[in-house]
Structures are given as C-alpha cells and as structure tokens.
Length: 269
Image 1: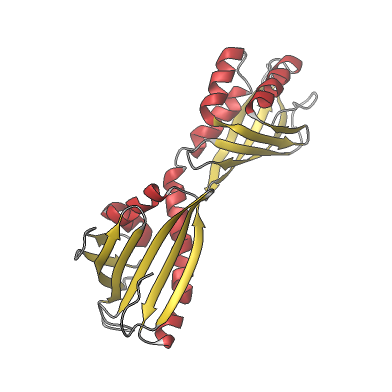
Image 2: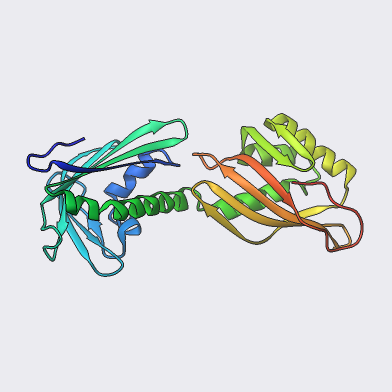
C-alpha cells in the first residue's frame, strides 16, 4: 500500500469480490463502468496524471488524480472534495490492490489522511461504497442469470437425452451440486442420471420459471412451477443458484411449496 508523507492516519478495508481481477479492473479504466459504481456523471481518465471525478447521487463531488495504475492489480489516486470540505482536493490518497483468490478477488483498500477525525468520518462511506461496488460488478458478471435459470428448468422438460446432456453441460459446472428434499447429488454425471430418471418416472411434467430472478453477488433465486401434460399445476417451489466466476451453475438448492393443482407431486429441483 502507498505511504504518503504527512498522511499518517489510514483507513483499511478488505472484501472478497465474486469476480476475476481483470473484470474488476475494467471498472477503473472504463468511465462508463466507473460511473455505474459512483453515480451518473462520474468519470476517470485511466492514466498517470489523469483526472477523476466522483459525483455522488446527492450531488457532492470528489475530485482527484490518478497517481499509479497497474492493470489488473493496482490503482492509486488522490482524493478530496471539490467544495474544499471536509478535505480539499489532493489532500488524501486512496490505494486499491486486487489479489487473486480461489473464490474471486480479494480487494484491499487503504485511504490515507492527514487527520484521524476525517479518516473516521469516511469509515462508513467506504463500507457502503465497496459493498455497492461488489454488487455492481456481480450485476454485470451475472446479467444473464434469468436466462440461465430458464435453461436449467428447460433441461428438466427435455425428452431427448443427448440434447438434455448438451444443455446441462453448457450451463453447469462439472462439479455441480444439487440439493432438495429428493436430491443430494454431486457431480454432473449423477445430475444427468437424476434428471433422466425424473423424465422416466414423471412423463409429461414440464418446469418453468414463475416471476423474476433475484440475483446478489453470485447467488440467484428463482421461483418455478411444474405442470402436467394437461396444463394443471402439480408442484411449485423456489431454486437457489450459486453461480461461478465464469457464470456456470455451481450448485442448486431447491425449496418446495405446495402443489395447487390436482394429482401427485413432481419430484424435480
């Protein structure tokens, strides 16, 4: 982390972001992505000496200058407020370091100040802004979560075994885990056999998504309904998807609701 003369009071924050370093760093080099984090009108010139502007939703503006930039691992910039308070432009330094991690990227932030009181005023601000940052990144990485959930449910309705296998391999991790009240399975080969058995013992049952998909930092939730060939609803529930860094489904956990139609339950996930 950068050590600046006279800036002896440092605020440190660390968090794990569910994305690769290269993906995260684009938010430091693309002004549009920078603005998606900080707020409309914010911008950055991603080169040493380049100017940056942070325009918070409430209208407050912070300005600075890029001091160091080393893709995809390091960004250093000066930080102060255009209005001069609580600190003037150039009076503090922010250092962001991105480290590779098995579950994504470890982001380490240090913000150096001249005064302890001003540092303390920024603790909650950075706690919020970095949490927002993680969500903005996940929103981009997993923008296709709704389509992914639809493809998952469609595989349970696919009669052709070869097409079903191709569809699952296209969306799921080889080590996918499947859990619900009828399933405790690990690995794509066993999941394929399990889905095939569901088709054999419950012919004509078709699953589909009901309502929107909610996604947060690599976790997605989708409600579903299972209908018989006559169109009657036989079962309903909710699936929770864990998504990998490459967008593939790593696990599915199913929660069941009560069937609203007639007949038995469809044992799907």
